[in-house]
Length: 359
Image (cartoon, rainbow, N blue to C red; front, side, top):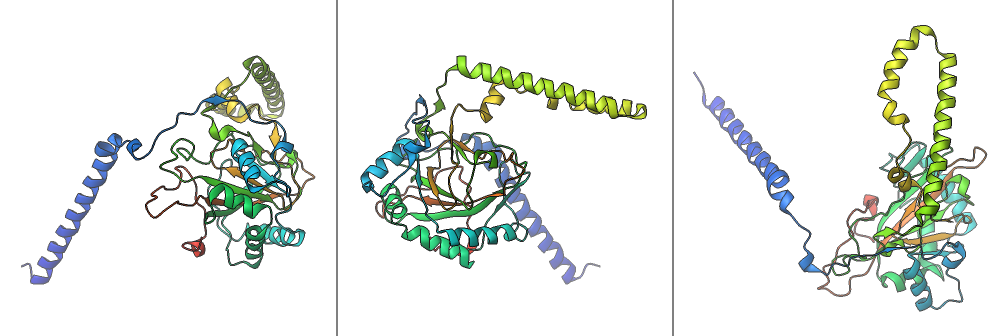
């Protein structure tokens, strides 16, 4: 005979099952019925259609903001190219102390997402760490960078991300990408502008994986290029790739035992797609005709628009140190209490919880 306690358990179980069913049905309709009909609310702001364009500069010298510039001149140059370099934002002692902390923290703090993550660390450091706090104070009080930041983003910009990336030797190059999808460039009435400050913690060369940048592409839908120049570059890379595959196959065939032939044949069939040369479109993702590389000194800063096309380079120098760089992202100031603009879509806001509400 079922007692009162058993009835209560059955009723509780029934209620729990009903709640789970309602939640499952709601999620299904949001995902498969209502979700696909959702459209971006263009009515809330104008939509700008960006043209294809060429890089605005092919020289890093055009991108430096110097003490002799007025804030208006610095802003105009930064907004034209989508990137600005400022020398010696961090002092040598702060740069050294911060680098030592990061190299140790890489093995103590859980990493977060990053493109081409093999031989790369991406961590969110503790903002209470003395070397981090010292660095933030120097950034906030720098006589060239602070006026630039206030002019470009407004006097009360928000810190929305702070992370550090370390490239070890043999880290692969990333594809060319922007950090946002829809942004201030396409929807100025819906999103606030967003810029990221990158500071290397050692002198950095291209062979160490210095960041590649494509000036002016924050205002572009795509990149204009001379295919008569680019296509031969692609064909040359394909020939080199095919030669490397032939050499690899000859080496592999000469060292394998006959007993492994059948096994290797099946593996070769499975890997055949991986061994094919890249298509022109695939190759182009990693090989924009942009020649500017952030090969700068330790403590120098690069402020770039989150929509700018850029890439982390490959670390190909076995004799060089790890490339460590701190990345700090700032969002623009809202103009009034009625300003409802939000952060751009697609941004990875990697900010330690201790900084939430204190930006």
